[in-house]
Structure formats: C-alpha cells, structure tokens
Length: 87
Image 1: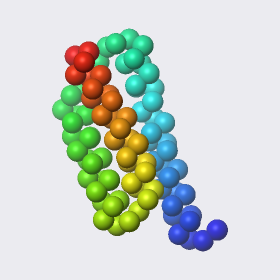
Image 2: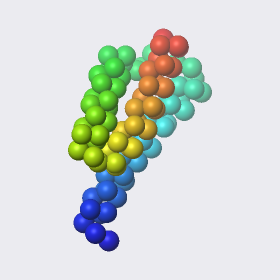
Image 3: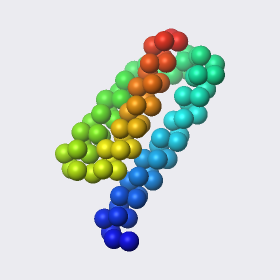
Image 4: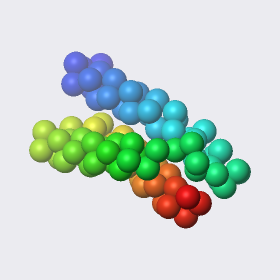
C-alpha cells in the first residue's frame, strides 16, 4: 500500500467515525421528535465549518475530505431540518 493510499484510508476512516457518531443523534430526534437539547446556533456554525471543509477538499483535491464531509454535511442539514421542524 502506497503512502498516498494510506493517507486516503486514514482520512476516510476519520470521516467515517464522525459520520457514525452523528447517527445516534438523528435516530433519537426521529424517535422522540424532540430537539430541545440541540443548539441551533451550534448546528449552523458546524454546517458552515463543514461547507468550508468541502471547499477545502475541492481546492486541495482531497477526495476523502470531500466525500466524508459531504456526507456529514447532509446529515447535519437533516438535523437542522429536524430542529426547525420540531423546534
């Protein structure tokens, strides 16, 4: 395995763990329909940060950053949607 492949695997693994970590939050919101303990400003700031990571990935041509943060962005936008829907 080349150094480049190892670096990509590391990035995909790190991003995958972040994605997996957000799934319980989504499931809990869907089950309880409650978002009272979720900070709206925090999620907005986090989404902006993720968008910047995706842009960074495109600028530096890092597929692991683009893929994992793209998925993480979708999940966070879904949480934001649920926060706005359920208050």
